[in-house]
Each structure stands twice: as C-alpha cells, then as structure tokens.
Length: 194
Image 1 (cartoon, helix red, strand yellow):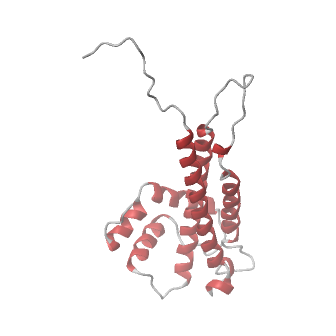
Image 2 (image 1 turned 90 degrees about the vertical axis):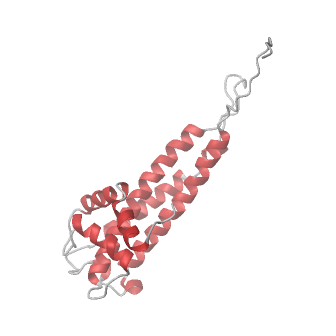
Image 3 (image 1 turned 60 degrees about the vertical axis):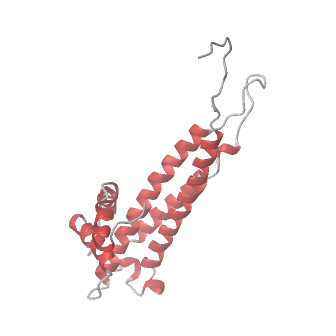
C-alpha cells in the first residue's frame, strides 16, 4: 500500500451513453407498437380480414372495435412525437460555463410514456384478436394462441354489442403485467427466450 497525496477522478459521470440508449429503445418500442396497431386495423377491416366490419357482430347500431383502433392509432401518433431523440438537444447556460447536458432524464421520462402507450396498444390488439377468434368459430387457433385466448376469455367476455372497452383493456394489461399470457403460451410452446 502506497500513500499518495493526489485525487484521481475516474468517474464516467456523463449520462449521454444512457440517453442514447434510451432514445434508441424508444424508437424501437414505438415501431413495435405501430406494428401492433396495424394488425388491429387489419382485423377490423372486412376487406382484409373477411370478418364483420369493426368486429361488430351486430353492426349498424354498434361501432365494435372501431374506437379501439382509433385509440391505438392516437397512442401510436403520440409515440412518434415522443420518439424524437432527447439526446440531440443541449443548450449552453450560465454564461456558457455549464457542461453539455445529456438530456438523459427527459429521454427516460419519454421512454416511460412510450412503454405505457405500447402496453395499452398491445392490450388493444389482444382484445381485438380475441374478438376475431370468436367470430371465426368453429375454426380454432393453434395451441399457443388458444391458451392465451382462454386466459383472456376468463376475464373479458365476447362483445355482442358495444360497451366500455377501456375496462377490458385494463384487465388484459393485468394479464400482460402478471405474465399470465406469457405462462399460458409457454405451457404450449415451451420456454420462450426473453
């Protein structure tokens, strides 16, 4: 042990590498959620799915999943705006004495909102997919899809007519968060790499 009379600053204190990573994953998450919304649009569009318009078995008086797709599209648009990278912005302050700022805190906050939006969009897709599977009966899905479908139907019934779908979306989000759907799929498909 040698005693030295100097201080070495070895900290990597600048947050820009973290801000870059957060900005990049925000872009990727936004793209994934956009793809999920596209699948909802294809399910509700009779020209694409061959199913009743908006997945409404009694159309005309019922809007079906039209508003589900509209809400998902709204969240996708919000994510596009939130995906602008925070790490590209820094404004000199204090008579140009302050360091270049990473904007990592803002990148983190934006990414958190994107994740919450994406969670809602994916839950909406599960809701619409379950409705579509019911409309396709007597056809049955593959075993892993069937397992997830049964878990969803334990908490969210088939929609014969319009109702407040936000309650259904919240229930499906709980199934996602609690990994109920993941475990159901793994019962059939085996362990998934995460």
